[in-house]
Amino acid sequence: MTATGEHLLRELAPQVLGAVVRRHGDFGAAEDAVQEALAAAALQWPRTGVPENPRAWLVQVAGRKLTDQIRSESARRRRETKIALETPPEENVAPPPDEAPAQGDDALVLLVMCCHPALTRPSAIALTLRAVGGLTTAEIASAFLVPEATMAQRISRAKQSIKSSGVGFVMPAPEERSASFGAVLHVLYLVFNEGYATSSGPTHQRVDLSSEAIRLARVAHELLPDSGEVSGLLALMLLTDARRAARSGPNGEIIPLDEQDRSLWNQEGIAEGVRLVTEAMTGGAADSYLLQAAIAAVHDEAARAEDTDWPQIAALYRVLMRISDNPMVALNHAVAVAMTRGPTEGLALLEKLDRDPRIKDHYRLDAVRAHLLERSGTVAAALPYYVAAAEKTASLPERNYLLLRIAGLRAEEARR
Image (tube, rainbow, N blue to C red; front, side, top):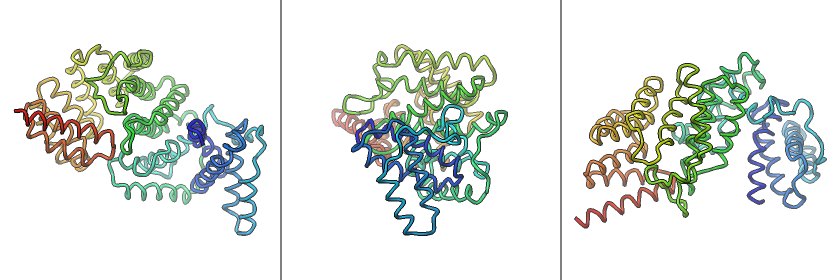
């Protein structure tokens, strides 16, 4: 299948899953049926062409597969499975009324439904990352800073909890929707982060994930235009994604922020993000997403790296730390302090993170310590931490970048 076809299937997958789950209620069975429908499409569409209504085609095939799964007679199941795969549905059939997109976007509906009352918030987020974001268990585990086996168990338990609860997948009432969106926004935030800086594999960015997260954040903003939290998240995504074209070289190599060609930054995205931040800041108290968006805006509004207002960034991170117990926030605050008052003060702040089990073994802590030691002039002390960071990261572009830093520093040491 072509890249265009694969992109279409990725875009349709959460919409189809949302329709099938809302109709049949069994998340686990619906997910299996949709995967089989996607596999059937990947085999059949290159031969017969994409149907005029591909979403309806997938919903029909998934519905048939789901029926097959719950029938007890194995011979009949095999016979109807063959029919479902070999006989294409009518291409112009519209989705039945109960499968029509609610509020204009089935993927967002699926997100809200996956924030099921039977689930804890971490489990809901993990499950929806699988269902809507299409992330692997390893990628989700990386986002949560937990082992892959732990995340696999969490996702499995989440599906079982939904099945055992007897509570159906329904959209919350309008007056309850804002509260339900908290977990939804967290999901979009993690999906965007995984797309913008992929945690594992050969590529530095997965534009399909980050673009889908932005698209869904726009839908959320249309549904809740007065929510500062939604505005802040959309602004954060736009302001961060605006630098995408400058973040990688011609061979996919990482280009750090202070070395990027800022003429490549998306000024339209920056302007929209700054406008959203400004409007949300005047409308009420700042939440975590809005503060992060404000930090991104300070970076984006600097014409040159040396023009960056690091004292303002450090101050924003201090506020953010008061409302968010996130070790990555503390790590970024240490960098901002180092850029404001010198690397020695930044290094002192890292000592507390050495005792935090959520980040003490993370490659980014080693990489930041190495960077600050290098800035302080102690290259020999920086090298072991660069090596440790390169060994720990699962991202090939990150590893290559760190290895280049190591080679450069070793060459510099040899010349002395």
